[in-house]
Image (cartoon, rainbow, N blue to C red):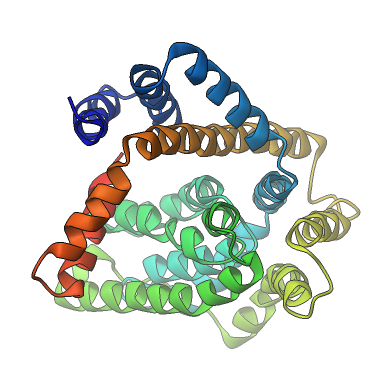
Length: 337
């Protein structure tokens, strides 16, 4: 059997089988990568490769930025910043058809700007926005879909953990990736706004209009946005002007969040401990995912499958946009797991 065939079997059969069995992605990639490397080279080489890659991954200074931004997000979650963001968006947009759903997307956008974790974003809006939408008779199709969809904004909006991992693995500037993510995140949020608005115009029962709020209440609610805006400007602004490195920016964001919440009693000891615990869980998941990807990448490298696929793709008599479409389809299928 050729090396390329071994790589194809590893991806198509073993890896997908483990995914379908429900195994976590990081562990599945690590197992297939280890077994494939063992098959192609030797057991001793596979053991040495795994040990080296695990140690190298977990000892990278650059990865310290990941738990810091995740911790920042959970501090914002447990201190009520997300609730105040939703309250402001609710008072400005709640009286529209689908307004509560639009308010949820707006709060997601703002919360994602200070939170590196999609999990924290979805959990926050699920706890804050879902009861309100149920109260005003929103259909579950719209309310649940809005919360799940809005959580994806954290993938693009800085300080996104995904952008951090991409920057570290591809040796790209994390600062530039953060700046590049702002406009797509805003455009994506705007498209979500328009989609909800149009759907509720077509079918008003999806999201009935809520009560109107006076101008004074609207203006007063903007005070709840100041904390999030200040944290975002401190982190992203500090990165842009060169005041911080990414790791220092995460630490500065955590310090500032603690400074504006703890003295005012907005963050309890229970909330702080919960933030530490959830940060540990998500950070461990991210680190194991990166480690698994590296081990699996080593296996693919020794089979030379990436080079064979690249040569095959370049030899096809089709437009480069067709190749790009195929790559995107692979991302969509892979993203389902």
